[in-house]
Length: 100
Image (cartoon, helix red, strand yellow):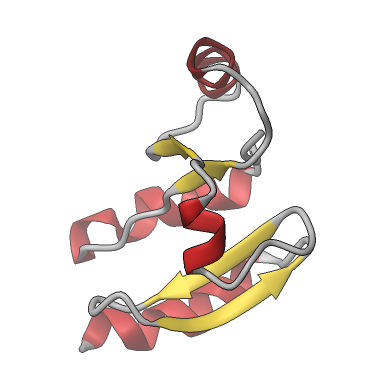
């Protein structure tokens, strides 16, 4: 199930006008209805997709949850974080990418 981390909520809202998007990926076997209910319950303000195996493979696999990828405007992985990461760390990586 995707994280309901408030840091993602704030970051998504703060940088949305600059073209930044957080996308959550549910990698468990939850149904669409379960994921929707989770997102509503936790006030998730960014899109969530259900994995189909191809997403996990395309990004080199998921070895830990949460796993967060910072992806540039061209779709290239700039950084991968395994486990919890503080929002300030994401912002240091995101800010230069948004300026490009």
